Length: 322
View 1 (cartoon, rainbow, N blue to C red):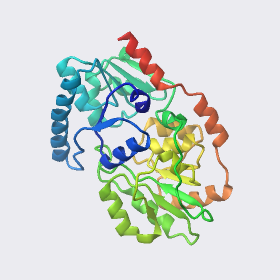
View 2: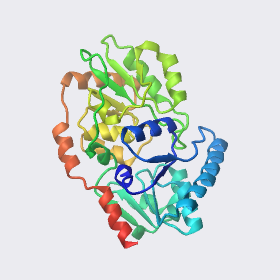
View 3: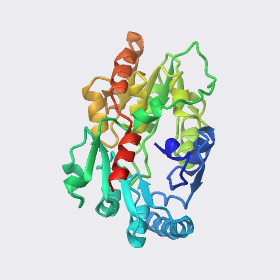
């Protein structure tokens, strides 16, 4: 959605993963300006950074005076838009992110959500059911459908490649959980060698994993377009977030360890594109079974992907009515 908007609109962003967003914006040729930074894992750090982001964001918004705000439920965007009288349309697929929802949802005019999430999951945060619009897609479908340049990722192709995406350990709804460490340990001690690629989210996470596992795993030093990496992946292990959904919709055998239970992950498990397992030892066993089966869901994934609508078109439809 951002890539489509970027053709004619100015894009501002805040993110936990500053470097990752900068590099991805270059890969995807998006005109992006990052405002502020994430506050890390402490409550006072998060609050201090949020106040700073709001201050910097206000200056930018006053300069170019937009007619409307579109956000992924940004508390800072919601407060500023409300404060200076700009209408605000938001997307969300994360009612489990309670802190963010409480600070943003009550202030938006319209909220767009995937059809697999009941509207009442957001009504409880202070928005009328009439102001919530369903779209028949999950957000990862936009990324998977988007045409992008496939980068070459060098791995030993004589081995099976397993990609692991650790949880967002600095997110308020996870904060501190590191179950992925135990999963990586169980997989890396197997006799049969795999290419174990870990796509860390933060510099601190990357450094810790390198120190802990050494040469047993490949911790990516550079930001790689997710589709490029999944293109050479034999099996993906994720925490149940966006990249788990991307992998599933590309038909890659996918395991979710469900770090933050959510409706999108439940939907993908229900339709058979994702296997859920939370025990590190059982995940290791399941990986061997899935790799030996050599079975993919590519045909089924393509059919489900093609049945999903484009949320961007739903956004335009909503904007015209406001």
